[in-house]
Image (cartoon, rainbow, N blue to C red; front, side):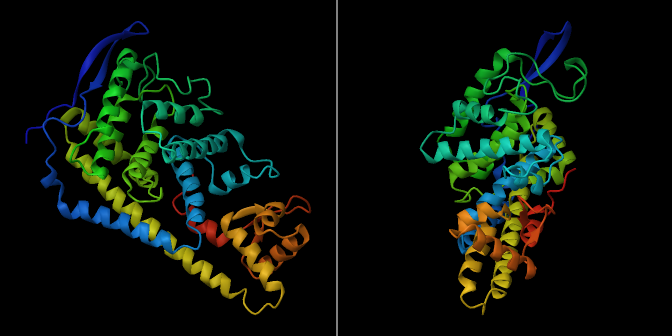
Length: 386
C-alpha cells in the first residue's frame, strides 16, 4: 500500500514569522487501514489480556481498592511524562490533610489529574457522552491549580502552540492554527461516536493520535490525550473496570512513541502505530494482572498473621482491611474506615507494625502516618520519577 501524509500544511504568520502548521485529515484514515496486516494474533492477545484483567479484578476482596490505587498510579505516571518528580507516597501523603511538607507544585498536578479522571468517569457513568464538552470540563479540572492554571483551563486555545523548539519557527511540530481547532475537534467527536466496524482498541489508538496532532489546548494536551484513551476504553467496556492505563508503556518507550506519531503524520503509517498501541495494551494488561495476583498473595499471607489472636483479632482485622483500602494513612482515617474507636485503631496499628505489616513513616508523636510498605512497593514499580 502506498503511504501518504495524513494531513496538509497551512502557512500562517505567528509572532512575525511564517509558520507551517499541520492540519490532520478527518478520521477514519484514507486509504483504509490494512487490518489484515496488523495481525489477528496481536489483536486477539490484546483482547485476551484485557479479559484476564477483568477476571482477576473480580477476585480481589474489594475491586474499588485496586481502582483507587491504579487511578493514582496512572496519574503519577502520566504526569511524570510531562516532567513532574512526585512519587506515589508523595501523592498519598498530599491527600492526607494532616501530612504537611509535601512538594506542592508537582504533587498538586498529579492530584489534579486524579480529580480530572474521576470527574470524567463519574460524568460518563451518569450517562453524559464522551464529547468535546466533556473534554473541556475534564481539562478545566486538570488545570485547576498548579502550573498551567493560567493557560485557559477548559477552553480550546486561541493562539498558536508548538512542540519542541523555542518558537513555532524552529519547532519539531506545529499543530493546526487556532482558528481550525474547533472544527478539527468536532470531526474527532464525530469519529468517536460513528457507527463503524472498527474495534474499540483500534478506534482509541486512532483517536489518541488525532488528539495529540490537534493539540487543542495551550497546556495539558499530553495528559488529556492519555486520559482520552482511558475514557474511550471505558466507554467501550474494555475492560469493564477502568484499570487499563498505558502511561507506563509510553514512559518506557518514549522515543518510539514520538517516532510513530511523526510517521503517522508524514507517511500515513497508521498500522505501525496501532501495532505498537496493541502491544502496549497487552503488556499493560498483563502487568496489571500480575500486580493483582501479587496483591492477592500478599493479602493472604498477611491475613494468616492475624489468625489465632483471640478477641482482639476482630478489631485487628478491621483495621488491617482499612489499611488495605488506604495504604498510607493516619490513625483517625483508620478508625473511621474500620468503624472502631481511636484508641482501638491506635492499638491495632501498633500490632500491625509489630507483625511487620505496617510501618510508621513520620517519626513524630502526633499526627502519625502508617504505610503498608509491601503493598506500596508493588504499586510503585515503574512509577519512579524520570
